[in-house]
Length: 286
Ligand code: ATP
Image (cartoon, rainbow, N blue to C red; front, side, top):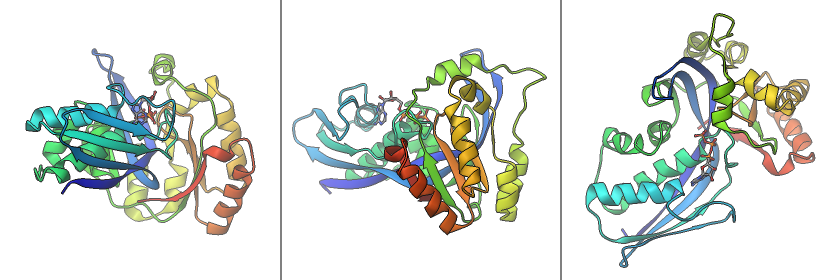
């Protein structure tokens, strides 16, 4: 095989709780991760010259070693002692720095593509071991689907697929610094933690109502206090018929779950015609 094309899916958090701050600055997390149909497309081609060449459709995305795809290819080459070069194009659709693990997903896609290209047949466990060196969310992005992620996000337990719903994504054009959000998070007796276990039982029972009642992200209040637009989007989405809404990751992306396809389409058209038009997507769970 000389080349391959791979889709790199976005994720949302149906639940996100921070249990503790760890001494190394990481956090102990309990999250429900879910891939959605919104994806980037990555093309990989073997080259004789040993360099890694990246091209991206967004001018502000780095194409050097700062790009996590570059780091993933380099790590795979070093670990598996591969001396070829790689040419890669990244076509981004997932908003960048949005709380949708776009970069982590691209890194996971790169490891999977390299494994395919070089016929190394690594196990999912081996790919995840490599992936966690690139980022805590990369192991989840390798497996995808619905999963409970604990530890720093790398201890994964697969879950059944959630009940069917349309997923409306709206990303306001504010920049959120993940570091700043965590810095502003106060973990004490007054912290309102989401009920992740009820979220899990809702998924297992196939109850969209219970799932929507238990969507929760402990970071949401922090990011909303910095960017109130997130709360405005949530309120409007509910008016437009969303059964539940939540901010994903550290934000600023908001998603709404709709049982009714027509309401989802109407809401999608509303946001497509608004200031958020370029960052509005109507998706499914994958
Ligand atoms: P997470 O949910 O894992 O925190 P995110 O959606 O908030 O991810 P990313 O889209 O992964 O954030 O981007 C975070 C930063 O990583 C950006 O500043 C971006 O420049 C950089 N980056 C490096 N490589 C990539 C890539 N392939 N795709 C997106 N961002 C990348």
